[in-house]
Image (cartoon, rainbow, N blue to C red; front, side, top):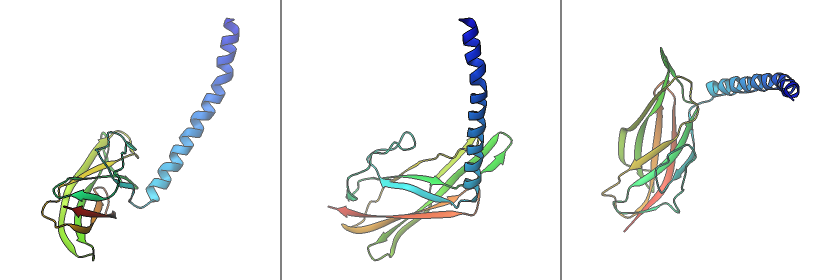
Length: 168
């Protein structure tokens, strides 16, 4: 019995090594694609609660908010750059917000309304944001929120716009 267990382990070792090599190659290809990709933001949605993990999204039904109600937005940035440090990497985004009326005229703008700055020993390629906006003093009507993400490790930026309404 002992011999058959040893034989099974010895036969599995080359398969495990091949799998590790395949996974390493896939990681390297993904990193290369990441490094040439521009900063972008995907999976943008109004949500009912802050996310605790990437993909932990409870999308809000509709984009109408009551006067004084906080607005939560979930988003997943990708293509951000890294600052190499002695301990690994720093990365993150400075976020600007702008509220536009239905005609596209700017009503409110705040640069640096939120900053996300992280450090890791590895080049982490999974990041999510939950942005909370308090929009008081706007009349009932149709609006747009524009978020601009500014990469802290490069000159790249990415924007997204979400239409929403404020109701009485």
